[in-house]
Image 1 (tube, one colour):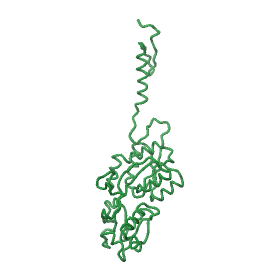
Image 2 (tube, one colour):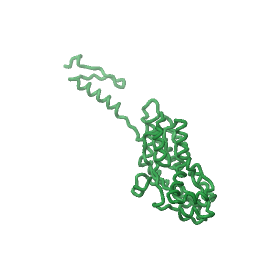
Image 3 (cartoon, helix red, strand yellow):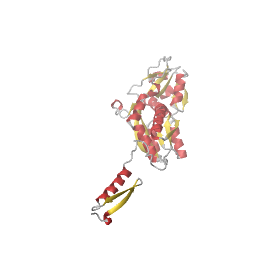
Image 4 (spheres, helix red, strand yellow):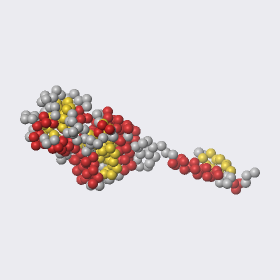
Length: 291
């Protein structure tokens, strides 16, 4: 017969259960059960555990204008799966960097090239980073290619009108200038430049509306376009970039921000970039060719 000193009364869901404790084994099992309940929580990858008392509701993401289509789609998917709203600030990569430095607010930065992320890191604005896709420059011309552009050299021909990105605002502007300089064409082409756009989307508008004979843009932006054609720049003349994404040191929601970055870098996120014409990182095709 078990003595009363070896009995315990346990309350569980309003029912009382008498249990005999032999050598403390039952108590040990109860403690283990409680620990397992506390530890075994299910967290969706990239999302914040919804059992937390204060769940962040939104993130501010500074994003280069050239990634708008895939990032809009990814933002909607993240919000649906994780319940966190994504608010984008789309602009040129360098313009965004200036805003981040001035305001010291926001959660995530996604420029059009690692060059700008490295600058942000040097200014102690960013920390955690992932690499997402390749950014490949190409020559964009209006549908039908009325000026007969076939190469970078053609941009320097008399009478050709060219629209380029602003090197002080957009990644494609700085890179376009560098491509022309590397190939000894900058001065000759600059004579044909009729305007400079603060974002790559402005360049697309000019070319699509036949307001310029050519521009240098990211090739993925012309995918499925009915108003533009692409003229490839040969590998020996081109400069390939990598699109990064990372968290800001100013973020007050670091776990959520990191979760979003990892979500973008996941196979599902990269698949969305590929759907919109990007080549996901890494890829043997561009191995050793990016700068």
